[in-house]
Amino acid sequence: MSNVSQGPGWWQASDDRWYPPEAQPGGSTPAGAGPYGRGAPGAGSLLLNIIWLVLSGFWLALVYSVVGFALCCTLIGIPFGLQCFKLARFAFWPFGRVVMTRSGGDTGLTFLGNVVWFVLVGLWMAIAHLFTGVALCLTVIGIPLGLGNFKLIPMVLFPFGKVIVPRAPI
Image (cartoon, rainbow, N blue to C red; front, side, top):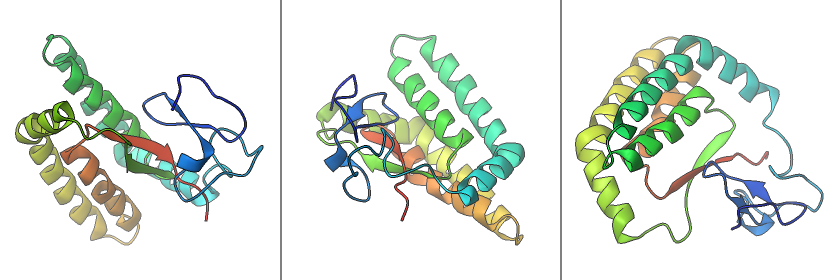
């Protein structure tokens, strides 16, 4: 992991750090494939993201951003505010991206941060995403959007030690 790209195949995760090709989700990246792997997400992801953005992504990202800003106004809340901003970016455009556990990210502070987050914010936001996902799945058109809400739940419960990376095409 590095703060700058070290050559072809290196990719940038949501933590703004660059990772080597062998750390690419879904396998290694061929040389010259660019920083995000073997290609951008397909047209299906783009279409789902646009529908998601219009129906719920904008509002979710806005809520996470406002909460993040409020948390960053306090010194002790800054790490939690930064997690809100990470969740806002993911909630804004979730399709074509996956959540991964950061290597070496399982420290005592990560655990403590996740426990505090879970009690204060995570459990309540996860319940909200669960109910929203179930409601969206009751309609045929809303099923992919409901699944998108379910996809956010693990990240909302325990965001510390996680990174969001582009999904490698199959």
